[in-house]
Image 1 (tube, helix red, strand yellow):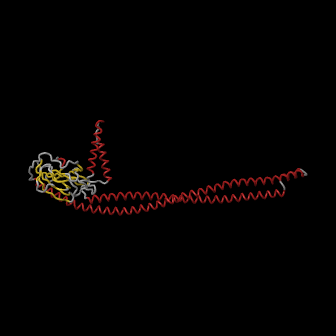
Image 2: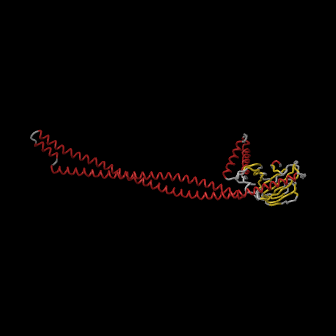
Image 3: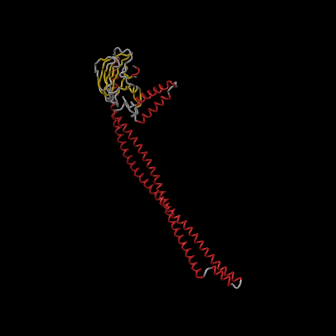
Length: 414
């Protein structure tokens, strides 16, 4: 039977096969290097072909349901990861939003304070200008302090009067000079405050812009988070539906498998009984391979990729496109042809006594018969045609060798 692994399992098989090929490769001479690589490549390809057959013991419905469930789980996992990332970004955006709002408030407070300082500075300048204007007016009314000082010096009767007069004049001059200096200072400070107000305006505008941009980002993330939550909710339901379908398919497969095991026991008992009375049909050498195709799945015990149980793969799977002639492995007689849910169309060929044992071979998944029950055939004759009936995902041949009623590795008999 041909099997298909899920994508992740195929990747692991590929990696393991390549690792094995590399690890077990002997040292080779440079001349043989290319041939050695081709041999390794061929071995890896053969391993992969065998790996793809690991859904043999499952119906198409179960395989499809399992793939749907695997896809649903993968999509749900991805959706939950996307939701977690989006929520994380949203939390960061919300925190940044609070920071931006705080910075905006601080910038607006700073602007308000700068404007208050500017108004106060302008009032001081006005006051200084008013004071200087008043002093100028008084000076004009009382004459220039310098002239008054000259007049006082000329009119002074004694040195003490002159000193008093000059001191008074000096005080008037100092007062005007001080007032003028203060006016200059206030005007300088006023310029600084005006610049500070303009800078504060720029800061407020920048903070508003940053806050607005982050608001847009936050709102977008809120929408994305809501959509991601809806997606997760929908995928949870999809997963449940797929899980229910997979469970129903599993139960159906289990019923079919129980019937198959009963059928296998019946065939085994029947062939074991015939083995006691088997006769020589002229099959003295190795059996003939039923097809020329390569092996896609070997005989042996394996773990079921879906259900997890261990079971015997009781034959060898060969690559055989639909319609490929299936040859008689030896001289024999067809003792049964029938359909079974898991094995599909089957043909049992009794080869009689071979190597001291009663041997029969079984062809499974065939599409059509060319030999029928009771008919004797010769080695190499076409007995049926390859197909994909029963539990099969592609045309191939599942070939079983029964020795004294028990399945044996077909490759030991060729």
